[in-house]
Length: 108
Image (cartoon, rainbow, N blue to C red; front, top):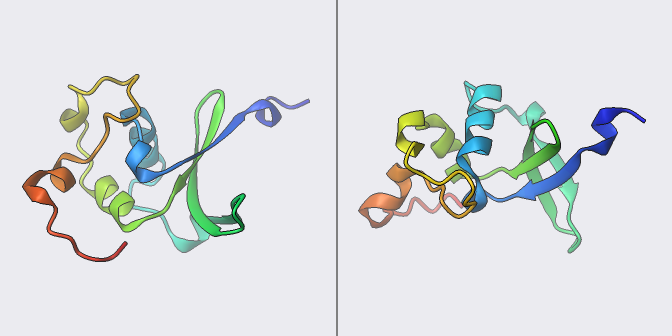
């Protein structure tokens, strides 16, 4: 059996991104992602989910696509995340999106 067959598969929402996963996304998609890089599938509730894929040594992450994900990737600066605890999945929120009490753009 191939090592890739043994990868854990994890679906992750923008709100649950860790700095590590965000860094991998930015590295894999430095200019953002295109429609042909988006994977569509149905979840357990039979809803269509769109995601982009990023893989670590032992896990394949499918990160749900959203407007906030694209904005966070565009504004990514490694220095903004150096104070976050990498083991805390709740720690990551783009500093630019969470400050100023979110002037909502309604694109969600």
